[in-house]
Image (cartoon, rainbow, N blue to C red; front, side, top):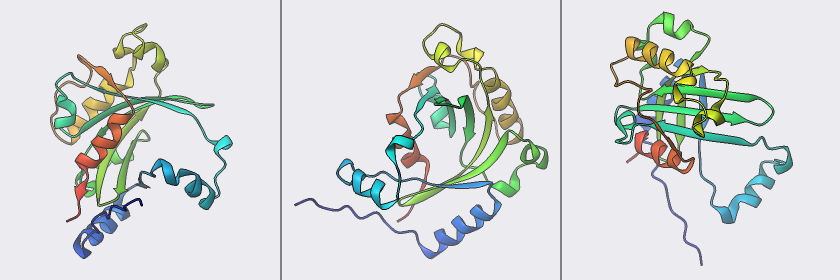
Length: 190
């Protein structure tokens, strides 16, 4: 018989903090992991059609010593079926009302709250549209060709806090790395 793992619930204080952050955010994402044994029933229960899914290939970047991760910086580029490329530089955690208005007014900047089992985190995200994600990841183009990343990181560093150079000696992460990163940076319930 399979055992169920119970995730700690948020305290009343944490729920109030989450709701306050959500009111100041541009978006809220609920993130969860569905065990493989429950994926079919979950898809059916949500009324989803897997054939209408959008395929995405996601790459995460960091220095070999994970300096960005240690500073709460996420650098991601992805290819999206039928839509093209995008990339982001994300800084977490941020306090929305402490961000400068000029940054909040930028069309390429968003404040996001990620809520996941047992915790949440608020992020500031700069988004851009690089020309050739796959070519950069495969080494056919320099990673610096993901051009918006240095500009976005400079904007975040200037307005929020200092961080090491974003585009230096980068190596791509696998998509599996994201789940561990989200759990580690989220404010945990307990």
